Amino acid sequence: MKTVRLILILILSAAGAWAQDRGVVEGRLVNRTDPALLPSGAPLEILELEGGMRPIRTAVADATGAFRVEGLPQSARLMLRASWRGVNYHSPLGFDADGAARVEIDVYETTDSDAGIEVEKVQMAFELAGDRIRALETWTLNNRTHPPRIYADPAGTFRISKAPGLLEPPRMHVTAPGSTMPLVQPALESADGAGYYILYPLRPGLTVVEAEQALPYADRRYTFVKKFHRAVESLQIGVIPGDMLLEGAGIRRVESPGGMAVYSVPAAAAGTEAAWTFSGGTAASAPARDGTAEDGDRVAARPTTVGRYALVIGPLLLLAFILPLWYACNRPPSWGRRMKK
Image 1 (spheres, helix red, strand yellow):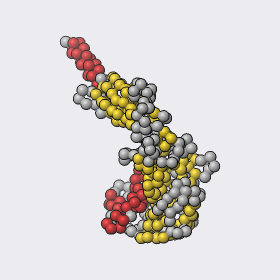
Image 2 (cartoon, one colour):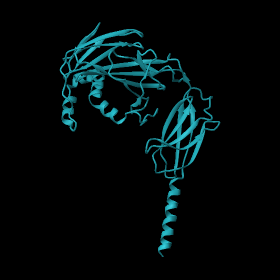
Image 3 (cartoon, helix red, strand yellow):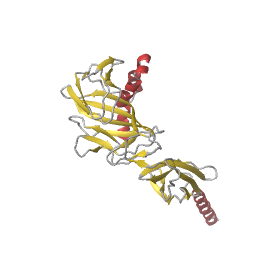
Image 4 (cartoon, helix red, strand yellow):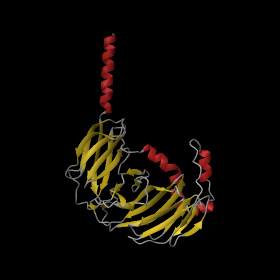
């Protein structure tokens, strides 16, 4: 009798496992640059997200860009990755009650010309932290190419100049159009040693690029020299603490909301350099590790001022709280969540 029960258990277990691997994904790739250019033969991978995006199936799109992959585990967290013109595209998979998942992924032709890339806005923030200054610059870039194309340049799609005395390579991450997750990107040093760049392909729409640099401030004086690789029409700079003085050509202090200072900076043409000198400043105490009380005190704001300078205060708060946590959880060499969509 025990033998019969054991056999039944094994049969039921095998049947359950077989049922779990009956998931099917169907879909197609659609070329949004030119629908006549069918993405035939595009390589596909099914990734299991548990344990670091492990490929479990491979396939290729047919002559029309359509595909079908069978035998997938329905209970696992899966993602489809497609590649076209050297750019990866991702889509999460969700199975219905019948074990079917359907996806449609937009793909684009690429260009190495930045003619359609426009600067929507630029934000900069500097925070005194012990014997150094943490600098964060945030660029919102709009890919307005028509017809829509992905900007992918082997020489770099975004670059920053290297600040004098830089203490460590910059930390950079990107938020893709329609996404809310910043993706860590390696900062590659230029051949002349004068700057850093990333290779992240810029999709049509708004892409946010952020770069954080650590600057020396042991002598309580530092001159930040920046080359603008793209023209900037307007720029405001946030500084913490408010008693750290910022001076430079055309710089004007606008207001000092909640222990910080906001400066207005003149427009800058592409290829020009700016030199801004920091001096003085009282280093703030480190934020509480466990508590929201100190964080809450810092976030508490004067409504009118915060509303007016939200674009500047946002990066400052990002510097103070989010970035240390983000980079602690996303250090190389782990590829982590470096997805491109």
